Length: 533
Image (tube, rainbow, N blue to C red; front, side):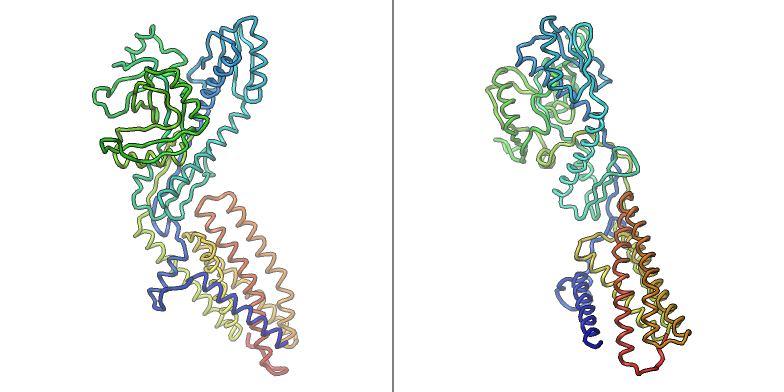
């Protein structure tokens, strides 16, 4: 008995020391401030405690669908050209309908060849139907849904990468379960939310297009120069660069980009030969080959660099270019931010802000103070009640509660879990569940003692009969917390995680630790001596 008790005691002390290390690590000193600094370093605080920015973003997935069908239009042109087939036009007949492509002017003797090509390369993604002089391709609903999901996930990954590149500590970037195609972003301790917002929101889609005409003073002038209407395979884009003489004017560009966002492999800020800030970029191998083919065929013709749907620069192609280029006329911070966004990947669609809320550090400090005060007061009240109502056995319950709290905080320190205000509520609820377990056990022991059994037999029967009830209550609560974690947002998940691990720790302390303490007390008592409970 004593040998078994010694082993259990050593195990409990070892677990206590391990989780104390999880809370404080190795502090630089033994003073109160050193321990406080070590605790702050190990326990990560959430947005509501540390202060920061809370954002809900809407991803405009329709833009990504439109970009995909634009790419399909370009691939169609290349495939037909490679097959030696000439058609009248390949366009999107309705600008408000991004899902449909139309091929018209199909030669009668090539109709079968074109249909075979469409079925082979596009039949999986598009519904294909015949028209009077060609074919119509409509993106399948399943493909549209898959593209929207992919766009949302890519947006989450891109925003996460950008925020991590800025050094934001413990950010939350995840799908927002309360809306469709929405993202929740929480940035604890952000000291420049304006810059972060600009970097998150900018799609930074850099595109290079062939110039079909311009500059034009007005949109009407552009239409008049093109027989009163913009051709369907071209688009009119406003100038947004730094040349004063071009401000407010428009360029007519080929709709399909030569290269665009995902084609960029790297980008770095730098300076041009005059010492002005610029951004240099490098294309992927496939995009570099495509760009070389375009520039070699269009020497002495203009091309436009378009960023976020505005023309930034127009230049004549002097010679064939393969995989490197430069964007000049940028400010210092703009060059750095643009390089970061190109390097981390372009957002597949633009972002609209639905909600923005800032929590100041003073409000977070107030939340910490009140939350910790509530936890301490609640725990002290419970411990005093247990001492008064259960006498000597109350000390047993209080030691188990203390160890439960140490294990919970130590686990948060080891795993890097974020403590939020709802998480503190989870800690308080864990204390309540721990007391509930002790009450079940102690009351059962009292019943056995009143039935005339010895102290040792009462303890054995009390733990044996209460165990099933304790396990049932903890498992059902864990299941509820798991549902909260799966379907809840950030703060709710913090509450669920804290509660689940706290309940697991409580099973260990209320049953194993408490039983070990009872065994140690009984081991010191003589036969027939009463138990203080």
